[in-house]
Length: 379
Ligand SMILES: *Cc1c(COP(=O)(O)O)cnc(C)c1O
Image (cartoon, rainbow, N blue to C red; front, side, top):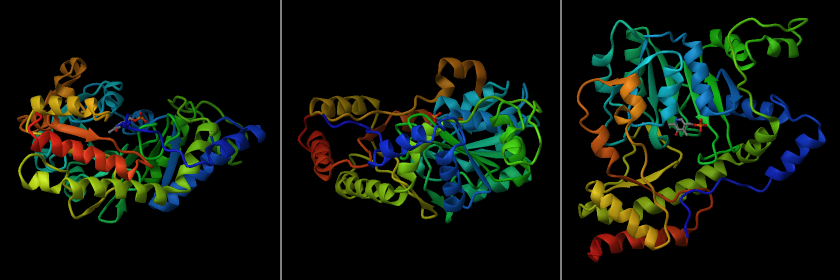
């Protein structure tokens, strides 16, 4: 069976985890946590990066930092993971969904402004598949209306927009290091703080509402409860796993890009002949090969293709069911304007196996099965 995903593993993980145990320092903000956040701050030219227990929690921290209150409105795409919305729903916000662009599956920047009301507090963008949203336009809109701009860059670690790292463009960004992402620590993430004035509060929220970080830096004599907060810092054991991959971040990225390009080149003829659509990468965007997907004609054809691949020992999967049509979506959200592409395009999308170290022969086999499906009328 060709797996859809395999967690990234470089070989140094066990050694580094062993070090945390030998050091007798396994709680949060230990040696490896510090190495990871410092590396990201330098690599991504970020003001401050704090490891978190998940991207979900990084988004929750962003909602607290943006002071989201009951009845505030938050604009985002419906084609995303539940956490993008839940982080704000937990603060009492109403989610206003905006349609996506069919080419990148990202929020349609031309449809954001008409969704803004006097209650709007923030725009949350999702960089689907690690391919950036049209950030210049979106940043201009956020500034014009004095809204927070928050990036769900869960999938965008090591991607850029006009040379700038995803996650560092808005006020706050968030990364995921879940097992299914390009770089992993099992469960984990990071919040990127791009406004220096929010750094101190972010540290406090992450440390249970205390000024413990300041205490450890020797800036104050004792630490105490100063604000709202929770426990958002991961164990150094997890950070040790992540460090083994960040050290090899370029190698992992290059390996994934090679696989992505192999799919892309080999599937071109099927697109030219009108059978499928392949992903579109705008010229401003350098991506990280997080996902390789193709689009079928419709949902029936997609189900048949997934079934056909499964029969040939290949695990391919679809992605998000748009949030506005979900059970919770009906309670907490509203779709602004027409759902022209969100539902229709999401129903066509199939993700092909993609992970660090996937074999060239496996990709060639997957491609040949897709050709058989379309050309030899096995449909
Ligand atoms: C994976 C993902 C998340 C959640 O990440 P966790 O680290 O599992 O909390 C949020 N948003 C998007 C777009 C994701 O892909």
